[in-house]
Length: 248
Ligand code: CDP
Image 1: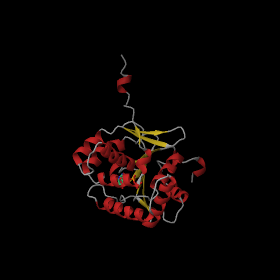
Image 2: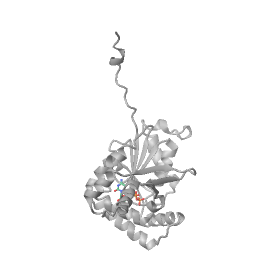
Image 3: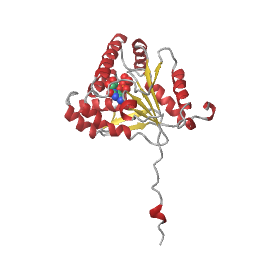
Image 4: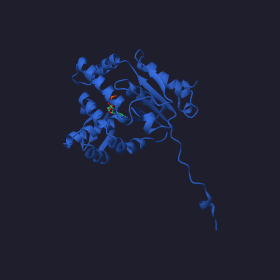
């Protein structure tokens, strides 16, 4: 009789590194996150999308954005798929309906920031976010990625930019994607969203104690990406994921 099988040590799950990018609305996190992820071959979690999807689902089901109990149930049963279409564009399907476009609208962001203040909603969405941590690695973009969802992340960045720069960027983004937007309204929206995100009791927007702050008001996207990659290069668990030409 052989005990070889029983004696074999349990196969250890591979360690999955995480890079977190947190920051206020329209600070450029999403763009930087997807570029960094592409370079490293990592997955991306756009956590704001989950809050946006939940806000839309609530509207579909006639649930008030303040009804914490019903929102918690809805968050636990979200029928949502994150797909990539034949042109490489990401697509979000909620209850069988393509909601990609309405998800990006400013009013959906505002509604998302309302449901995001509710503690039971945040807890209900936690496991869904953690499940994105898959090999070889993850770049997670949000408000509380480094503080709450992935406190053990290898690299944590807190990305900021002035309110004017952020409003200008969001304005361009919305116009380019065919949405209507007024700059004055956007500045006001951004101000309201900042206040709500910073002042909420649970998982408020703030840098993790071990986060590096990156103010990209005067930077191009590429400069911000390079700044994050420089942190990756200095991390011994992450450096091996850099393409050869970017090795220090
Ligand atoms: O694109 P933008 O930064 O404006 O928004 P988003 O990242 O899609 O997030 C929409 C809203 O969800 C934010 O205003 C936050 O209130 C909330 N959120 C959050 O509370 N925690 C996260 N990890 C991500 C988003």
